[in-house]
Length: 402
Image (tube, rainbow, N blue to C red; front, side):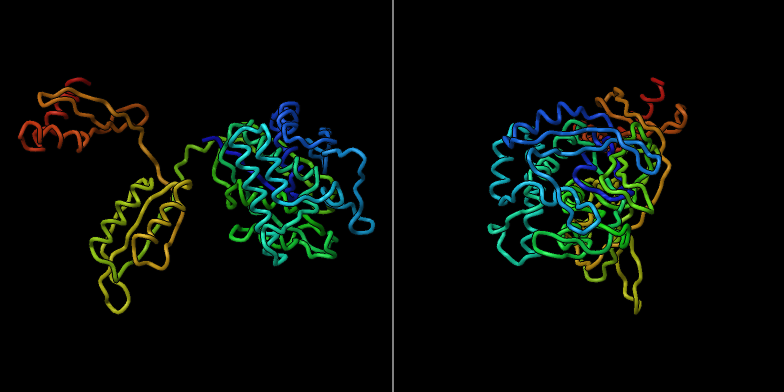
């Protein structure tokens, strides 16, 4: 699956995500045409080139007719969305999204982002979700930003989104409710459970909209080895004295290096049946391999270590199944690398029927071959012969056909 890698060098906001996507090649006309189906009038996209600290990229403004942004802190430009447009309730925003002509997956993503923001705001303010009334996020430009991010991902073909942990900013800002700390409480709530870095510029580096995009759409953590195919920069409105206010977005393919995780759990109170089921369940959830090995724990207690080899997309699912199927209270994980031989599967004809043979290759040269066990077992049962006879026949047929 193609990757979309985000680096919030100066932070992340909805407009910066849109700008970075356009810089990667998303057509602004197609983006705006899709957003017009929301039925929200009185706005337009202003797409310009802008540079910050010598880095040239794309800058996006959602220009709202007849409204002017105001400064929340004297002498400091306000974050985008502050003071723009009237507030809206969550149900009103969701109705706009549901009635729009956005592609189904984009519509579902936009809805999920707004619902996530609503839950965070409800918790911060201590009110029921149904009573949440958005001010900044309910403004026209923020609605366009959130829905635009979903449309941009749809136009990019829904790559897997990964982001480096952001710095959230620091200081104080003013909101519709009065002075608030930076990062705002809603941002902290939205990114709970995600890795973040304290500090950053003196100001709001991550807006609630930007935090919601990361929380709903991205996996946040160290970026993997990759091969970049396109790089784009979304340039923000503010200027930071110590860094460029840009969001770097890279479209990439996974590198050939096989970067995997080993998950492990020590069990001294599980039966053999539970251990066997845990291994099977890990494989069912997509583990590349799973196994159990005898170990000795503290006080000389005999135990079993259950392990699984997984890639990143399946790590969370396999971790959950180890918790569900065993008695462990913790699952360790460590990143590993491996070298992998090339593989081909060839079907050979034997006197017992067709059998698949897995062939190992190094630089195109064959190193070995192994008949598929399930095929050989099925042929052996059909003909009432020993398994090893079918395996030998399959190897002989493969060698004869090379």
